[in-house]
Structure formats: structure tokens, C-alpha cells
Image (cartoon, rainbow, N blue to C red; front, side, top):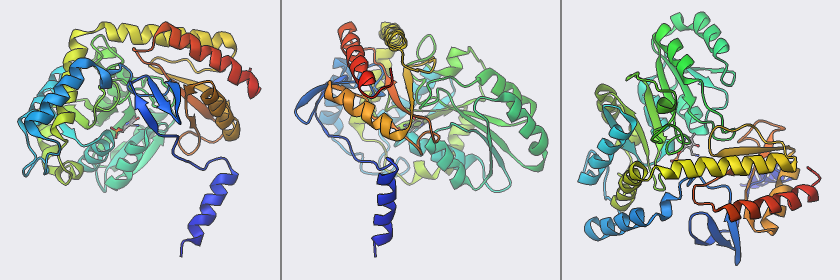
Length: 391
Ligand code: PMP
């Protein structure tokens, strides 16, 4: 019965696209882990600020377990609606400077929920070609017509709007804020201008911009100093905020509508209280310890410069993500394995996550990396790069 699946797996193996879970983390302190008994430095985590191990975040989580227990036991609209959930939503709204916010069980579910609630048959979604898989899946689920515009190409987007906008009821323009595999930033001001000109909604997924961009780490809207209250800001609590869960921040009507119409909100159990407490504490820490942002960006600059000096092809980055381009999948895997031998953990990113021929290492830097960690990693990159013939 399952022979056809086995055949597909064999094909994946032949083309170096087979995926296996990496060696599990036996110990973990945010930027270091023990894998297969060996201590490794992580240069691939989205825990950009090291919040998952911040003493205040851990303490708040433990306190919440004592007070509220573990699971929430129900969806928000039934018995899973705790005081903490509302506190978190208010806290996110303050952070994002929006009227209100709604929390989902993950960023993935937030994207599915918001897109499928806002548009449907007879509507149009315009989506950047490098948008995250959860946006793509949200678009598919919505059953709206989806047109993909070239990466950050505002002129292409305008052409599509001119040709298509009038044939549809609603139109949603959707983009990642920071692109997850390339680390670059969406041209949000220009997208907003087009959204206004063509009476379209604008949604930005700030999963990798939250806690990274903007003076307070509030993301791309803050980075560009945009005041518009109609931008729909989606994000996740699972990256720089070191917890779990997704959110949508926006105006009161939008959020009220999502509570009524976003199926991934309505039909999924509410986040567990300790996870919510962790996210609230992380937002407090971010507000009070802004130096973490400076530390993160200083580390990114140091690492980026070091890789360039070694002769690697790295894409210019504006975030905490440094894409090191390799090209072929098998060579990317070889580079990742060589780095692992030297105690540096950076998994290979291959199609379909990135376009064919653009396999890469997606290096991420954290505020909690020490200068000596970066030095040690660069030495490993020098050795591994030579070994696979990249430099
Ligand atoms: N959007 C983007 C841009 C992401 O990179 C991710 C996570 N990889 C998500 C959404 C999904 O967030 P979560 O992991 O919280 O489901």
C-alpha cells in the first residue's frame, strides 16, 4: 500500500532533498547545545535575543505553572480564556502601537486564520514570491485568486493591480516584513501607498522583524516610521520573544472580526498559561533591556564582516539572518556537516524551502553570542569552506 511513498522518498534521497531530523538537542542554553554528546554553538536559531533563557522569562513561566497549571484545557471561546491571554493581547497591541491584538497557537495558524478570514472566492491576494509557506497555505485555504509578484518588485505589483484590481471584490496585499530565508526587508512604505491607491488591505508578517527591527524592536512598521493604523501586522512569539504562539495586531474591528471568523483561532486550544506568561515577560524584558537589540546588530555586523573577509558569498542582510549562498544541495549539506564536525550547528536549507539552485546556509546571529563564539564559528567556517571547496 505504501510502496508509492517509498518510491518518492527514494527520489528525494537521489536528489539530496531527503529530510531527516537533525540529532536532537540533549542540553540547551539558548545559543549552545549538546547534540550526540558533543557541545555545539547554534548559529541557526530564531531565538534572536536569547529570551528563551532569560532569567525573568523563565521565572515568570515557572510562576505561571504554579498558579495556572500547564494546558489551558479549551479554546478561547469556551473554557480556555484566561486573564493572561487578554493581558498578552493588550501587551502586544501596546508594543505594536495598534488598537488591539489577537493571539493564535502559532504564527503558522495566525497566517492561515487571518488570510482565510479576510478573503475568499471573488477576492484577490497579491503575494510576494518569497513569502513564507504559512502565507502561501493561508492563500490556498482562502480560495481567493492568488497572483504572485516578483520579490519586492513594487512596479510589478502595480502592473498587476492596474490589470486585475477592478475584477475583484476585495484585494489583500501580503508580504513578509523580513524574508525568512533572505533576511531582507519588504518595501513597506511603497506597498502601503499602492494599497491605499488601489483600495486594498495590506498585511505584513513580522515573524523575523519583531524584536529585531525598529527602535523598540516593534518590527517593520516601526522601522519605517509608518503611522497607518490599517496595516495588518502578523507575527510570532516563537522567535525573538522566546516563547510560542502567533498574533495579529490591528484595529478593533479587524480583531473583533477575527475572533468571530478565524477558524484556526476558534477551533484550536488556547495557548498554555506558562507559554503566555513567558511571552508577556519577554515583552517586558525587551522594553526594559533595549541594549539587547544593539548587541544583536553588533554581533550580526561582526559575523557578516568575518564571513565576507573569508571570501564567502553572503547576501547583504538587514536583519539577524545571514544567507550564505552555496547553490547545489549536496554541497550545502557537505558544508553543514563539516561545520558540525567543528561544533557549529547550521542546517542546510534546500528546495522547496528556497528556489532551485539557491541552496544555502541560513545563518542566524543572537544577541547572546559572545565575541569568542563568533570567532570560534568563523574559524569553523574557514575550515569547512575550504574542505568543500567554496573558498
Ligand atoms: N511566518 C514566517 C515568516 C516564519 O518564518 C514562520 C516560522 N518559520 C512563521 C510565520 C510561523 O510561525 P510559527 O513558527 O510560530 O508557527
